[in-house]
Amino acid sequence: MTTSLPLLNADDVLEALRGLRAKQPVKFWAFYSSQLGGVVTDPALMVLPFDDHMVHRGHGIFDTAGIVGGKIYDLDAHLDRFIASAERSKLRLPGTRDQMRDIIISTAAASGKRDGGIRYWLSSGPGSLELSPAAGAEPGFFVMIFAGLSYPERWYTEGLRVMTTTYPIKPPLYAITKSTNYLPNVLMQMEAKAAGLDNGVFIDANGFVGESSNMNVAFVTQDGVFRHPKFDHILSGCTSKRLLELAPALQGRGLIRGVEVCDIPVADARAAREMMLIGSSIKVAPIVEWDKAPIHDGKPGPVTRALFGLLEEDMRSGRGRLIDLP
Image (cartoon, rainbow, N blue to C red; front, side):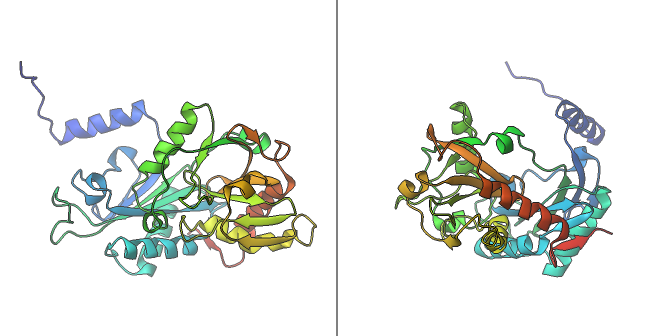
C-alpha cells in the first residue's frame, strides 16, 4: 500500500514551520541570510535550502560572539578565527572582513536585545547533492542572534563530573578548524550524559590532554602553575587565549605562580590542584571529578573562581574588545 502524501503550497509550509516552532519554542531573535538578502525575526523563516552544501555534506564553518550589556564582546578575535577556518575549508568568503563584521553588528542591532549570543556560519552554497560544491554556487553567510547557551548553576557552585571519552579525538586539521562537523563532540557528550556525567575529555594518541565537547580544558598544577594544552591539535579557543593574557594578574594576588601552554600528560593532569572548562558560553567552570576520581579535594578551587571574575570584568570593560550596538 502506497502512503498518500499531501502536496503543500507556500501557505501550508509556513503554517507547518510555525507549528514546529510552537512545539519546540526557541529564543531566536534575529537571523540574517545572504540567500534571502536581509534579516528576519520570525523563527519559522530562519531556514536554509536542504541542498546547501553545509546541510548535506557538512561543508561549512561557524563561530560565535556574545552580547553583554548592549556591547558585542571580542568579535574581532572570533572573526579572525572564522576567516582562518574558511581558508582551511576552501570556502569563499561572501565579502570583505569589514562587510561580514558590519552584517553581524547590524543583525545584532535588529534583534533589539542587549544580552545574548551570536552565531554565524559560512557555507559553499546550494545547487546540487554532489560531494563537491555546486558549480557557480554563491557562498551562504548566516547570522543568528539568540538567547545563548545556558548551563546548570550547580556546575559553578558544585563543579562538573567528567569522563575520558571512548571516542577518538579529531585529527589536528579538523580539530583546529571550527567546522559544522561536530559528530565526535556530540557523541562524546551523549556518552557522558548516558553515564550520568556532565561532559567528556578527549585524549590524543600520545597520551596528552586534548579538549572537551565544545570547550577547552585547563589546569592548575600542585605548585600553582596555570597550565593549558597547546593549540596545535585542539581548537584555538578565543576565551582561553584571552584568559591566558589575563591570568598573570593572579600572580600578584598570590593565586598562581605562572602560566604555561604545553603538552599535558594525563598523569600530570589527574594530579592537578584544579581542573576547569573554558569557553565563550560556559566562561570558566570547575571540574571536581574525572573518571570517578576527585580532582584534589573534589571542590571548586580559588583560581577557577578568580579566572571567572577576570573574564566577567573583561566582558564588561575590556579595552578594545567591546563594540557598541547601534
